[in-house]
Structure formats: C-alpha cells, structure tokens
Image: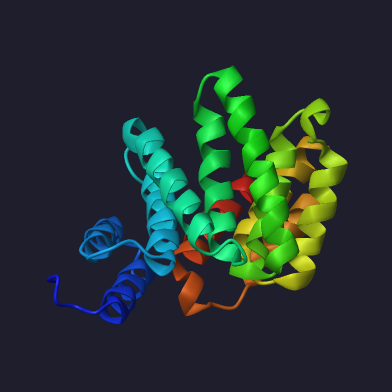
Length: 223
C-alpha cells in the first residue's frame, strides 16, 4: 500500500490480514500496512499492539520480547489518544503480562502489576471486549501471580467463570481455566472445560484459536 491510501483502507486491509493469522506472514504484513499510515492514530496504534502481541506469542521465541515491547509502546500511544476506549487498555495489558513472563524477576513484577492495572481499567470500560478478554487475561495473570501481588487461584477461578458466562464459546478461556483446575486438583472439572472446547461451534473470527485449542484439549484429555 502507498501513502495515498486512506486510513480507512489501511484499517480494512489490516483487519483482513489479521483475520488470516493462521499464516503468521499475514500478521507481519499487517504491521507493514499499519506503518504505511502517514501519521499515528488510535485506530492504527491499538491494532499495532494487537499484531505485536500475536507475533510475540506465535513467532520465534527469541524475538518475543522485542515484539511485546513494541506492543506496549503502541498500546500506550492508543491510551494517550483515546483513554476512554477499551482497546488500548486491553492490548497494553496483554503485552505487559506476556512481557512479565519472560523478563527478569524484578522487571517481571513491575510489568505484571502494570498489566493488572491496565486490565482492571479495561474491565471497567468493557468486560465483554474480545470475548471477555480483559477478564480472561486478568484471570491468567492472577493464576500466575502470588497472592501478595494480587494473584491467587480463587481470584483467577472467579474471573474465568465470569469470562465464560459472557463468552461461553471462547476456547482460550476454557483452556486456561482447565490448566488452573488441574493445578487445583479438580481434574473432572478440568475435563468438563476441555470437552466444551472440543464441542464448540466454529466461529470464523476465532478459527485459528479454536483449531489450536482443540488440539491442545485432546492432548490434555489423553494425558
């Protein structure tokens, strides 16, 4: 795309490419498309944060931290442009949470706490965004954090249940919840979540995640 393309054209092309994220090259191309915009904007920046999250999670592990840091920068720009919108808060929280997992312990704690604040703000703005994404990611963070830092299994479990009540067809939430339930020793409850993943109806918007998570669910049940 050239500089003559309108922002609307850029956003449309980006969303179509991200929709085809089963091929990671489409997400890489979406970043190039977004960066072709003549100036930064909220709609550009939150999509950059989303794309960098995906590239960090699904791409080369050695490059993950760099992608997450770019996602953090884009998320913060989005918040500064439209603080009342959920998208920037959510994708900032996601990138911060993932950064916390792979940084040194002290830096990880700082980023985890920042992620928690961003996600809590996102929940207040729109808990249902991205199939209850703010609740799902906060629960994942609480699952991994010690109680002294605001984590804990009970807190995580409650938020997973809230997320499932909002978006029962989301397989990511159910896989995360199943992992928590297994750690809690509740294997039958975990199996219920995994069976729900296997029986979910296909949603074209979540095809990549559903297919991936169904493979994970089968392995978890078999083990």
